[in-house]
Image (cartoon, rainbow, N blue to C red):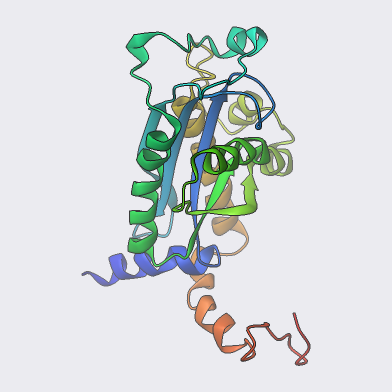
Length: 238
């Protein structure tokens, strides 16, 4: 393997503390994760190139069949324009949908040497709440995502561009926004990925290069006490 490829491979685990960022967008039938249907999932797995720039990798799009007894609100469907029971959607049940999303993420985690995936999203805790509800309903045991940590582009968009609405943040970032495709889970995930990667790459270029994080995971492990508590510079728990 060329040296540049080897460096790119080791960079992900060092840059995000062992996390693999995966952009996720979900389209739902409402706003309550415990009662309302998930109708679409879009995911984009991120990776570094040989120059240390973060970009989009594998893309995953899944249409999801409402679970039995799911609530679906008309006002939600007016926004996402989804017909939940249209046979042309070729929707799969929640368990199969999670399998289709999780399998390539776990494969990428192994390739990158990461111990967990972290959900990147716009108002990310909203999507994570629905994802966790799906995992609970299906009893899925192979969820790669951290249960509560997220990277939120609403926050980052506000920091970088003064905009917390996805379309407006993308416009400020110079990304073309197609309103006709908006509220499609995969399209929104792809746009969120471009926004997030642009912010990370700008930080790397102007503040701290991604290469500066290389080897940090090993240092963190060496600084840990035998009981697993990381020690600070003066020996106290960090």
